Length: 364
Image (cartoon, rainbow, N blue to C red):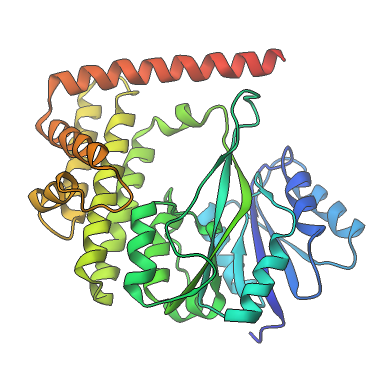
């Protein structure tokens, strides 16, 4: 398909009627003739599609397309979007997030000046249900506004920063096509975490724009949604499944070190999350499965990964934090009763705290 736009903006939407108007308004007001917007309604049961059609009618100057399909999940939506896109670059936006003013102009300028394979940006964690919670802006560790070359310069900071969201990377469409579609793994959570390492390994150049791309909505029920065997398994599996692709790409020792550091953190997060589930044989079997996925997904040995943490070789972590993480990974793998007790109590407190915040939000 011949490219006729600079940027294709792809918005997956499923039962998004409560958010899609604001999401599209923030995009449409910035769009010019070099941009197309593709909204894919993934079998919504509300009036998401009607709201998209109303936006299109109100903005006839915009190249806005609505694609409707039976529900297949966000991974398949991304794959369909890549097949349908006509732009040179791909920007994914989730239907509940808000693109910030002036962003498309800044991305256009970076493309015109540098034409990199990938552009990456910052973003803000946004807690709309908590008036007392300020926006939390990320700051990546890449040098800003310069062209970076090669796998080390692109992948090592990526794994060190651990900001693995499809929408935070504006990627040349041909990179996706050359890897072959479908690219995002169907039927799994964290499909972007699984696919992006492979995508970035295929990129030769990157430009980091130190601007807030979007406000990333944090939902009040996010913790309770996290507490499931599927969430825990897919979270650990996402990074582990990227390892064979990176090995074939011949990534360096530096990238492997940062990858294994990220794997330790993701494993620890999933294990801690599992303590929000009932104590049962099934939960214990889940943790054993997470152990196996984690260990198999490391480039080096477990001892090497923990030594790198304890020696402060993971660039984004303070030495004290690195050593604490290594200690907790050892405790989790050993089945420490003290570790298990602490995580059970911590998880119960976080769930109570979140439920309380949600009730206060609903009351107001």
